[in-house]
Image (cartoon, rainbow, N blue to C red; front, side, top):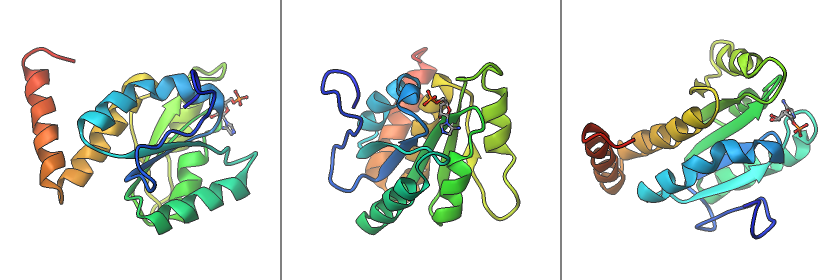
Length: 168
Ligand code: AIR
């Protein structure tokens, strides 16, 4: 993780169940709220930076290695002409969740439209713009994995109960 360690990769396991890819290091603050949620849901995750436009080969390598290692869900956060989630969805058959980042002068409208308007056959599950979307990406990944994982399902239900009690 960027910050104390100065690194941009954070892994709780060698092959994380959820792989998060960012279009730029500058997107890191947007996904900060994901970590506690993913940990609460008991999901291992990794964070990589690979711009679909600036580093397409690196992106391909990340997808290939993650799939080989058993990653089940990909999350992609990017701003401006945010093609990262869509390009990732073209490279993998696993679910891809896209987080639009409000990084440019259009304040995320550009990223939202770039991510949500995928052509038929290549889906990206688009969540809200910014940090709310990042948190929902963590929740959505957990709900997907909960379908086949009772422990994750219990953690998701526990979180929902907390929300119902007024938590957020
Ligand atoms: N971006 C990077 N490569 C392609 C795109 N769309 C996005 C990043 C970031 C924004 O452009 O996801 O939100 C600005 O990136 P940077 O690196 O200039 O700060």
